[in-house]
Image (tube, rainbow, N blue to C red; front, side, top):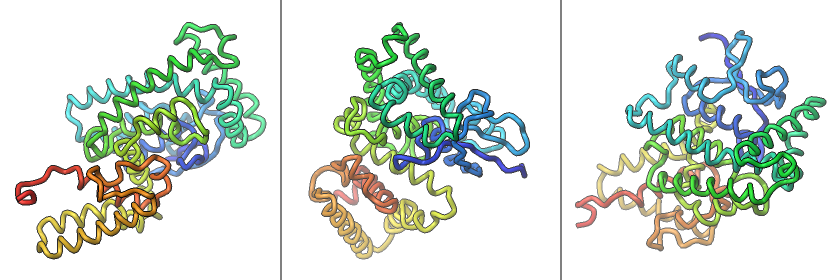
Length: 347
């Protein structure tokens, strides 16, 4: 394949590669597959099949691909398949979890972004308006608002007029299902780097695209975000989001130095010292501990002096304050602290 592939998306915002959930989903899918694309922050859904971004153009092909599953299938035919190592049982499980996540989180996110008066009126709509070229915003934004109302009204059997200015009872119902899903994901990711183990799959891309906007939208409080940040987002979810962000960044050639200083470096060092001279291993671990303690001082946390894994008491805001290198190193430290003790270590 010699023709360039171009992905048209909405611009970065809120510390995310794109503020639009679907754009974030497709960008992440391409990145974790190592699929080379030119990213164009066009912010313009005009001429796309459904009047929405993202749109993935393959060379001179006229019509772009816009759906998550159709892009995944196309990448698989090109031998870019992040799910190649999944067993048949895991493939079936992937489909079930995808459907569950979309069914549970999409209504809450649609309501939050396109119906909730405060969020839609003061955050989401102004952001899209500032990005979509004139005069297309005047057409597409009312269209997205109406489509969200149509979707929620059918799903919850509510009249359109009741949703025009928000309906707190509908929001409560949608958030309840979303919170159950967030509980499930937190439990699933409690001791794993990614949903199916040590490597990200296409399911991670889908889940990330729902979780990241909920966690990052700049609001003082909204019910789903409060629940996510204060009650269930601990090391498993916040560091998982951070590590996936690193995975996305690694595909960018300009990030080689960060990659070297980050999780790959740490992993190689731990492997090397596993068979090294015990004296050298102790020196290495001492230096690692000093780093963790320095990091803990910055964040006002006791860190390795507590009985909990390093970093487990950090909030998402504290995680966000770290550099890419720090997140990667902290993640490796956390993984080491949850590993079972081998007989030689405990004797």
